[in-house]
Length: 573
Image 1 (cartoon, rainbow, N blue to C red):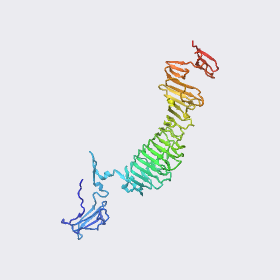
Image 2: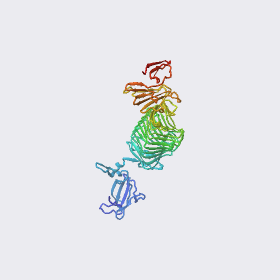
Image 3: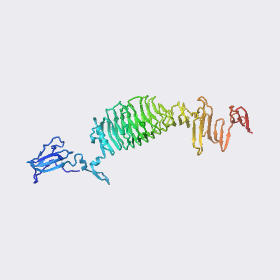
Image 4: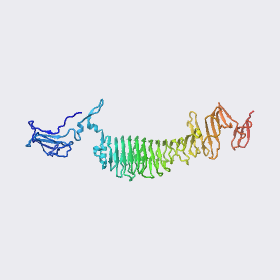
């Protein structure tokens, strides 16, 4: 590419067209008679005399301010004016210069526009004077850049460390693009907020963050001053690589005052570490009418908090509903921490949630008002409390290595939790349906009704199991061989020390068998026939009960009544 050689020296002429030898060039601020300096060098460090006296060829070296307009008066050596021109400026210099330079994008259909229009597609905080050296206070400059985008747009933070002394506030439609930038402070402040103030009632939307950002707080201080706040904000995309550390209050606060926080994506590759307060607080309890729903939290890891005995994460408020958490992790080496506390929040879903705490840590605490929350891929270690027993857990049992579905708490002292688990004792598949898991025994408390099939009595109707004893145990298969074929077994135990009756239902070549055994004692059903296999010589008398049996000694069908009377109903002859 080639360009015209710029004229390094300016030459002036008299009215007859001859060089203006010894002529005078006066320069003033445009529209005034106030002298304005010109310079002998491009740096603008050495001023010319004003007026500039031309040499024997009518020439001089004149540099002037690129961002200023001049009035120029040219006179001969005797001071007689030859010409005057007002409002003279560089066509490409100064604030308006870029509007005089053209730009067109490559590709068919591209339209011509100015470089100024192209560059104004985004705003840099350095356009407003931010320094980014970690020493100069850039608060006003950053806020001015954000406020300049009243109709929305992107504010770029070039790589650097930006010191702030007051909260940075972002409204609707503004995205912050961080190019490996750091926001740091030495003041006890909330650092970055999207949305309304603590008592604000306006609703905001359609902004977010991207890029690589670090937020470094001032350390201990007010617990009401936070690292990153989203309040009364919806449809935001808060992604990027973000690290938040050393905050006195909550690292990430998602809060609804009396408006909604909904349909936001929060997280991507976020790390929260070394803070003194909550790592994540999703809080709809600030004022009546606030709600937080249908937000997505993903790729957030909180660990190594600076203070002990704190709660890492909290969901609070009955109107915290329908939020989804993917790949979120809360970790602690202190046994006085609570990793996740859920208080009255409902129908939220957690996929691949990691709660990793030291022995004695309260990994998960769910209050009584919480219902319908779903956890997939989690059984927390340590202390786990679900006071409502109306939440759902699907995943691996951990120490037992069992796939399971559980409704309610894992606390083995409770009676309300309900569990479905699959295990393989001795290589045999079993389905365990239980109220809780206690020393290898699955049990259902009094009054529990388990329905399998169509609850409303549709095709096939329901199968109901009623636990009327102290408990029903579904334990290991009998040691006695019962032949091949699928079977279901129910063990009724009134204490863990003894088996008080077993019913096994099995299918084989003989039909559907009830209580098959090596001795052939069974009830079987096949081809519309109900049969009794040879049983015992005489069953034990049970008061108030009549028992039907096939007498093993003579093959006769008999009934024994509660008073011991035996009647023969049919003989084997």
